Structures are given as C-alpha cells and as structure tokens.
Image 1 (cartoon, rainbow, N blue to C red):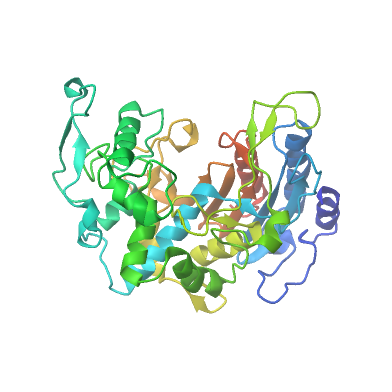
Image 2 (tube, rainbow, N blue to C red):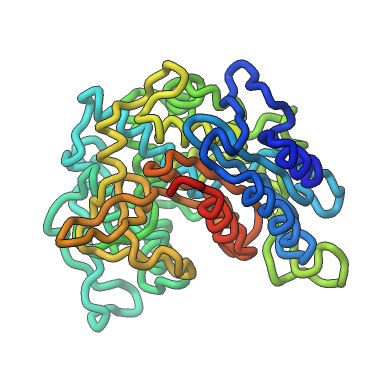
Length: 432
C-alpha cells in the first residue's frame, strides 16, 4: 500500500484505494484543492515505512482529512509479524484511551437532554460514590491501612469528564494509590477480573481518591465511571447505548467493545517493544496475547476497537460542530464546551507521557493552546487524545484538519509515529 499511496499522490489523488466517495464514506479530494501539499504528504510515506523497516512497529494506518474531505490515507507494514498479513485500510485496532472522547460525547448527549447536569453530584445517580475518602498524610499510614480524610465536596459529573475527580489508575507508579485499589478489591470481594463496569464502580466506592475533587488533575478511571453513569440514566447497557446513539448514526460499523468472530482476522496484533529476541523483522517486539474485547465489561476509558475510517467519521463530526451527513450527535455549543479549558491553572501530567506536560484539558480532550498576544487569552490550536497502544488522533479547528495514525505497540508512542505524523501534516498545510 505504501507504493500505491505514493503513486496516487504523484497523480494528484488522495491515496484511498478509490478516488470517488462510496455511500456513507467521507469524500476524497486532491490535496491542493484542500490547501495541502501533495509533495509534503508524499514525504510521510517513506518516513512511516522506515519505522517498520527499523523494527520499531509492525505497521499502521494513517489518514488526513481537511474541510470534510480525505486528502491522504495510507497503510504501512503488516498487522502481524508472524503471519506477514499486510496492513489494510480496514484493519481493526484496539484504540485504548481513544475510547474516552467517545464516552464523553455519549455522556453529553444525556446532558443536552436534561437528564443530568454537569455539576450534579455523581452520588445522586451512583450511591456507591457518596461519602468518598481522600488520601491523607503518608506519615499516618500503617501496615494495614492508609491514612484518609473525608472528601470536602462531592464528585460531580464535570469532575469525571475533566479528570479532576481524584480517581486514578492505581498503577505501580503511584504506590499508595495502587495499595488503595488493591484493598478495595479485597473489601468488595472483587479479587478476580471485573465482569462489568457496575462491579468496577462498586470497587471504586471504597478507593481513596488521589486528591480532593476539583483540586487536582489525575488521569484515571473517571471515564469508566461515566460509562456506568450512562447505563443508570439511560436504562441501557453502555455498549448498546453507544451503538444506538453514536455508532449507528455515524456509520461506525467496525467500532465495538467486542470484535465479532467474522472480523477477527482483521485485528492488528499488539506488540510490546524492547522484549523481543533474535535479529529478524520482529527484533525488539514481542506479541501480546490475542484479545478481541469483552461481551460484558465495557470500559469507557479504554475498551473499544475501531478503524481509521470509523474514527475519522467521529472526528469529522467533532470538527463539524457535532453533526455528520445530516445526523446530529450533539450541538455546536456542546463541542465548544468540551474543547474549552475546564481545569483552570491545574497542570496535566501522565507518568511516561512527556508530551502532555503544560497542556490543558476540556471535557474529554487534551487541549493544545496558542498563547495570546497583548494580554489576550490563549486560543485553541487543536484538541486530541491517544491510546496506550500508540494510537493518535487530533482535530485542528483553525485549519479544519482531522488526522489519525494508528499503530499497535507499547509503551505509548514508542516509535514516535504520532510526533512524526503531526509534524508532516502540519508542514503540508499550505495556507497557514
């Protein structure tokens, strides 16, 4: 596909495997008609291919759309190193935390309908999350218990959307929080794998928060709680709600929490970097066990599978103010609120993700801001998010650009594909 993509660009066509839009597909157009450089986009092909040749990733799919039309899309490498199955534009990826923006949009549909408010206490709908406790002074910890203090205010829906609730992932990088989450699992009898998000919320009701609600930004399980909130308020399972209110209206027919059996040969293998042996194409990459999702556990923070094609439709809906092809998901003012800084002067930080430092966060999106001049406030440059298996997307509203690059390797952005792709796309925009 790399060679065919280069040929299509040379001819002045978007390399999508077909120049005319099929029914239900985003249209394609010559890059120059969209204010983008064919030559600059063509330079992305060898750069992305080099990542696979160097053994940093197995392969991936990339797509750029501007002003509602696809200017560039390509595949590179393979989706499985052992079988050498080629990467195709309909390859299905575990998108991990790129699930989060979808969950947040789904929740905002209910907000628009007046079924809950952004500043409602979450305990109003999920009693398990009333009367939360917050980690106290470490010097007061004992061998059997962590020091905690009462939450001074309830967790609100806005706190969940903005990751200011205090819920963490409880990882080894956060020893006290990891200990709290382990204790909560034992107390609730949830020592095995969680079967549902309802079970997860039961556990979280016994977890100590990382900080007082609203007083810090902590990346964690807040968006999983949103999935359960959607279930309780809508009366539907979270997967069914997404299917009815997001996926079907947007024709995202390959996006789900569980990949159906007939589609499983299209799923890309996930690799962990730095653990392989030998000198072949897979040196430095070790395949993780095959995983096709869950039929009962619907993680709003990281459980979805999708394709570049499907996610581009979701992102294009965002850019277009909440609607696509005549189907409205949310109102423009909702997108505006979601892409406005909701954390004030709080700082964002995720262990191991240096690119997030200094950025802001809205209601489900990271925000890259351009400093104002002459005392003017900062303005939004782009909003974005990514997934642990090195999937990336962003929306650049100033230039009307949607960009997606999907690979499957841990740790996050190991290959640098996300940074490389962003730099290349920015360079291809001709009318800055």
